Length: 251
Image (cartoon, rainbow, N blue to C red; front, side, top):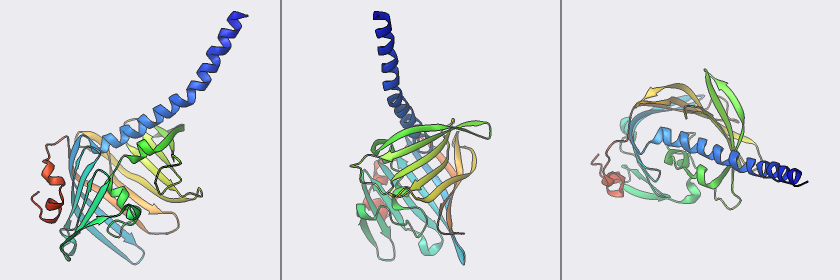
């Protein structure tokens, strides 16, 4: 009878512990993919293309990141957009427009709004890792992609989390490359999807070199980001991530 009781306890303990282990593993998978494209620090040059049925425009930009709390993105072309920039420090974001020569703090209520008229939001550009800390992660299953194992992770925000999305579904390769990320509203309706179109090795690591964000209800409307050059774990001065440097570039 004692052996039977011990066996039941062991089985019950294993079953009770399984969801926690899955949640922990899923969170680690999400964190690993964020760390992969960010590194301890990074410098990159990118191209963003905004496509609409009747027009298309392309912008070049430079970006610096340091840890998970600091980032700076500055537009370098075309000429009419040159100098526009976005600075993120901790949970604060500022934007700068040379035409008005003003640094403006972006309120938290505007983080879900479009960045530079694109299909990416201010939050997307900030590349914050809130999804790791403010969401509960569940490993839904595994798939295959070009010879790699792909983890399908569902991320649902905590009830008290101040976030836009009701849930997100990520597909992440076993080499920490994000394949896709689906964004669902509070009603469970799919709103937009980020897809990795080209994957390669840059900066010494596998990366999604070209990604496209597209809304589900807007046919033939999308925004693409392409990495042209990137370096990881580089020395970056703290002065880069200041409002003074945002307005009067020294880097």
